[in-house]
Length: 250
Image (cartoon, rainbow, N blue to C red; front, side, top):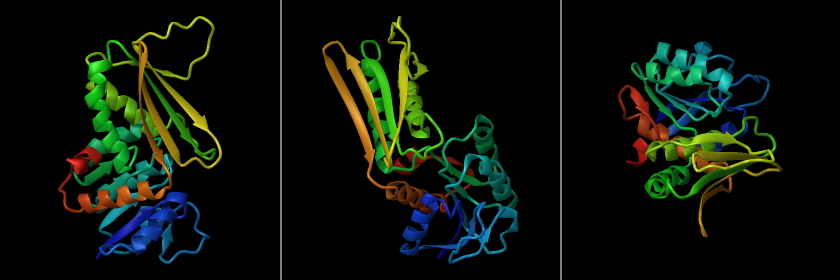
């Protein structure tokens, strides 16, 4: 049985992970991290990773982007592998990942859904054949409590498409105005927020008289938690390095 330190344990995703890990045959949560310490839990909860005294085998992080840099530093200091599933990381935080991965195994993905990552493979296969003749647009929908826009997943999809193109597109976040030209060189990325939508991403390839749409819909948060657990199982077998869902699916 491997011991998990769950970062963001009191958050919505942290609660889902607690439920799923309870039923997992090889993982158990022995400690948590959260800025809220007055909620009940079946394990000790700390404000900082440096305070954790339990033996930890791996860290799973679904917290707030502002908490991730300190957590990465603590994992490096304690030589702990870490799965980072928190979205909205700053460029400075992302720059820490390859540095930390020289010492510890680091798994990072802007979306832990297996379906989203299979979609990425499909988009990278399709996009090069259409890039010269089709506009590419991304629409993402999430619940009204989501703080970041566009979503990390929308940017992941956009970056993945661009990586496959001969000439990457320029991102346009939203669209407004009276004299727009909407050139093929742009990729529009649009965010919708409302209600309790767990997450929906649609990539549209729009050509002359024909349209292709690829849509992924998250029906519950369990898909992200399941992906994070698969990432943890994968990472426990790896040496130091930076890994993502494409490595897991390879």
